[in-house]
Amino acid sequence: ETGVTQTPRHLVMGMTNKKSLKCEQHLGHNAMYWYKQSAKKPLELMFVYSLEERVENNSVPSRFSPECPNSSHLFLHLHTLQPEDSALYLCASSQAYWQVGPEAFFGQGTRLTVV
Amino acid sequence: KQEVTQIPAALSVPEGENLVLNCSFTDSAIYNLQWFRQDPGKGLTSLLLIQSSQREQTSGRLNASLDKSSGRSTLYIAASQPGDSATYLCAVRGYILTGGGNKLTFGTGTQLKVEL
Image (cartoon, rainbow over all chains, first blue to last red; front, side):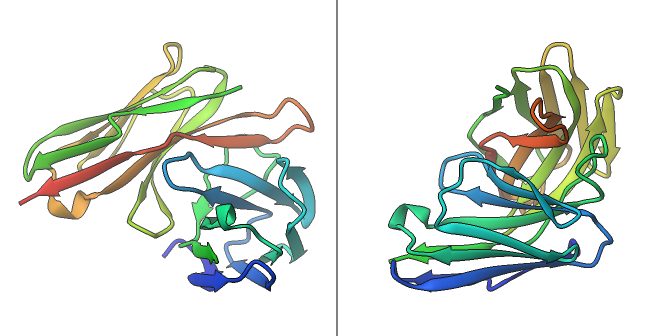
C-alpha cells in the first residue's frame, strides 16, 4: 500500500460512454500525476498538477479531461474514447513538483478497456 | 529528449541465482534515478531511489548502482526467489526546460521470472 488509491480498478466502457477515474492520496503531497501505460510501451506522462493547478499537458487528446479539486484528489474524465485508449492508467503523487527530484508514489492503476 | 532503455526485456532464472538488470539513459543531466517493481496489472512500487550524487543504494537483497557520466544503472538482485517475479522499471528524473519542474522518464522494463 503506497498511500495512493485509485478507483475503479477495472473499467469497461463503450466509445460513446462518459466515465471518470478517481485518484486519492493523503500523504500531504502537493503534486499529482496521470500516466498511461500501454502494452510494450514506456509509461507516458499525461498530466501534472501542482497545488491544484495544471502545470503540464503532454499533448493529450481532449477526450481526456483532468480535474484536481483539491490537493488530495485527482480525476480523469473520459468521453468518446477510442479502442486504442485501452491501457492501464496510473496515478502518482510526490511531495512537490517544483522540488528537485522528489520520490514518486504510484497507485494500483485502473485497467481501462474501450469496446 | 531523454530516452531510457532496459536490457534484457525478459529474463528467466532458477531460484537462488544472483542477477543483474540493466538500464541506460541518453541524457546524463538527471536529478535521480528510481527503480520500481510492477506486478501484473498492478501499480508501481518504488524499490530504490539513487540521487545523482550517489553511486549506489542498497535495500535488503537489492543493490542499485548509478554511473551518471556513462548513463547507466544496474539493479542487482541477490539470491533470487519466486516472489521476485515481476516487471522491473527504471525511471530517470530530469529537468523540464519549459516551465520548470521535473519529470520522470521510464524505460519499458525487464520482465523477470524466477522459477522453482
